[in-house]
Amino acid sequence: MVNKQKKWTREELILALSVYFQLPFGRLNHTTPEVKELAKILGRSDNSAALRLSNFAACDPYIINSGRTGMRAGIPVCKPIWDEFADDKERLFNEAQHIKATLLQKTVEETLNISKQDLEGKERSVVIKQRVNQSVFRTMILFNYENCCAITGINIPELRVAGHIIPWANSTPQQKLNPENGICLSPLYDKAFDKGLITISPDDYTVRISSALREYEKKEYFNKHFGSINGQRINMPIEHKPNRDYLAYHRDNIFLGD
Image: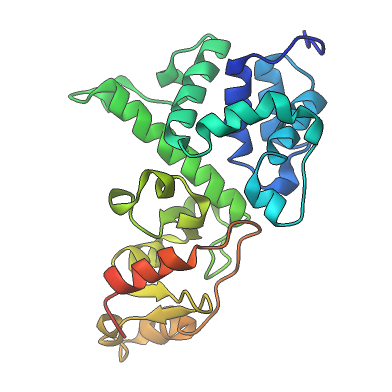
């Protein structure tokens, strides 16, 4: 039964903030499936859950600096949680997943579809943390790019990859789950980007193909799949454009050169 009167607990606020970070500003409303799911888990109304997410938007410098604003009335309740977790998203998402599991009366493994085989020979906490990070990052990036490849516009679910600009292993804690460090690409271009065969210019967001890739320019497939995208501007996300410094890192450290 939905209880509209009870005060929000710390655990509920943590779970709400984790949902907030995964959704674009335009989806912080009571009709969004992820908001409705949050409300159901918490035993609150859809409107109550949406309002709390909007309260977090009022704490978000990114939203404020863009000239937008959330609902400010809830700032006193939300700001302490924001200040605690805004720069420590790995801990936020990990704690939120455990809170979600407790509220659903399930194991964390069940909420993440982790099987016994997935855990064989591995440390449980490491596997859970990796799965949480992968799931959250993918959700953020796909929403940000409206579920479409930034180069081709392909929106086939099985052909969408949420990749990092600066690789996870080389990212700082603040960069690892930063949506500005991600881009949605189809598998071919995700792999090409990951291997430095293509890059995206930090100056104008256009695709550049590498000299290593040009070695195949006489092949029939070259113009269709690579020559045609050289100089093409990517489809920009609805929020959080790729960080120019991160793109410069990719160009200078991963890209195989013009």
